[in-house]
Length: 130
Image (cartoon, rainbow, N blue to C red; front, side, top):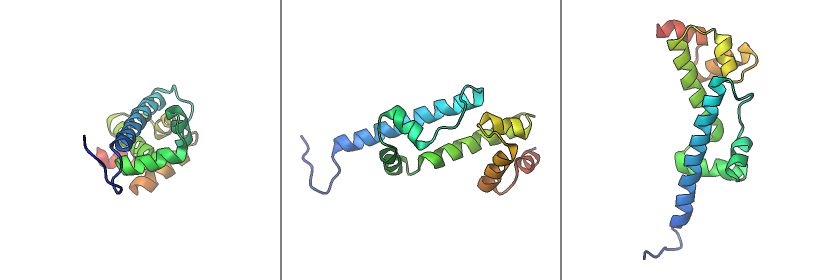
């Protein structure tokens, strides 16, 4: 059996870290699917994910930083952006409807989010992707 020194993180802790990260990613992807299908009324925050994982939001955030080098917010923003870009490229859905799929009640809020992430508006992205 392997002995552990003082400066090493115990194997059991590392395994739990990876388990939490994997469970978060699974929940996040399911939530994204629910948003896109219209069955989720709002976007989850870190506290929503943490409560479903039965841990404190700060513990979730710290664990994700260690395990996958991102935060709940960053992960969700990146995934929403990826899915929005895909919808803009592959469908003719109005920008407002795409925003609503991701629980942006106001089209301008979705446009601001998209532009802050990419530097261009959703319509500019759609035109450049064609």
